[in-house]
Each structure stands twice: as C-alpha cells, then as structure tokens.
Length: 193
Ligand code: GLN
Image 1 (cartoon, rainbow, N blue to C red):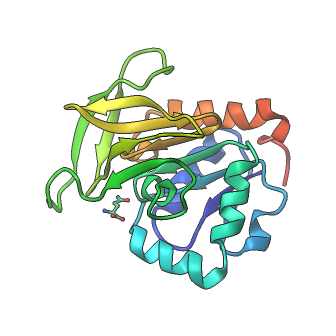
Image 2: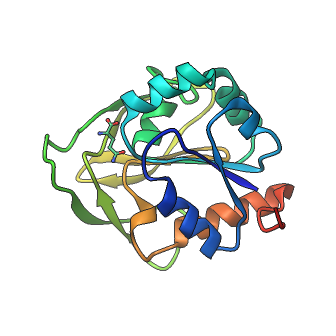
C-alpha cells in the first residue's frame, strides 16, 4: 500500500499513475493514515499550505519517522521542498523556491535521471524549486538530475525527490521504478487493499 500525502496539491495524478503501475493507493491526511504503509508520495502543490496542514495535523514527526524507516519515499516539487532543512529536515539539503524565475507558466525540458535507462525524461516544471545546497550528511545525498546546471533531482537511499512533475506526463518510468522499489522492499505495493 502506497500513501499519498493529501493535504493539498497534485494528489489525483500521482494516484492514477501509481494505480496504472499496479499499486494500491491511500490518501493520507493524519498520522493514523501513515500506519501500515509500504511507500509514500509527497506531491507537488504549495509548500507553505502543506506545511501549515502538516503542523495542524501533527504530521511532522510521523513523516520524519516514516522517512527514517527506510521505506521508499517519492517527493515531487513542493514535496521536495518539504524534505529540506527548513521544513521537515528529512534530508540535509536547502531548496530555493520558484527557482526558475517567477513565471506562472510552466516549462518543459528533457532531463536525464541517473539510473533511468532508455533516455531522458520529459520533465514538466511548474514554479519549480531547485536544490541549492547538499550536505553535510548524514544521510548522504546524491544528485540524480540537473537542468542548466541546477540540481532538480536527488536521492538518498530509498528517498528520491524531483523538482519537476513526473506524474504529469505519459512517461511512467519514475513511478514504475518507485512501485518496484516498494515491492522489492517487501512492501507488497501491488497487494490488494
Ligand atoms: N512553488 C511551489 C512552492 O514553493 C511549488 C510548486 C509545485 O509544487 N508545483 O511550494
């Protein structure tokens, strides 16, 4: 069972794509919602609103515990911001919000993601952040994607975060790999609810 933090933001798109990859999915709004999950998605949206919701629901510590448990965690855009030092502090990184100008419009770019074979991914950026500082760890953080010299993808063990929106394209490779990682971790992402 994979959870998607559903306080705000792009929940539905992640859910559809995860289900298309064979996973069972649950929306998470409270600490109890995290119980029994094998993997977790922190979606894009608006990180300030999500942070307020996390505080309201008492989710900060449970989310940190989930991340520290070694279960796979996929964070996109505002979700990546939530992982940084100034938010949940799950990873020793700093993010700059709206790092690609203040444009309302999105832009797309072909981005090579380390470990994803079969060529670059078509990445959709919407008021996207970039990672401006990494480390010192622990945990160690590796850069897995860059665009024009900006870090837009990081990985630390089972935690992966992207500044773009892999749930908004037809290219399901990031979600497929994530669902496979959840299953391989013994999580039975594909089990019936
Ligand atoms: N700019 C948003 C924020 O700072 C993130 C944008 C997104 O998730 N698409 O929270």
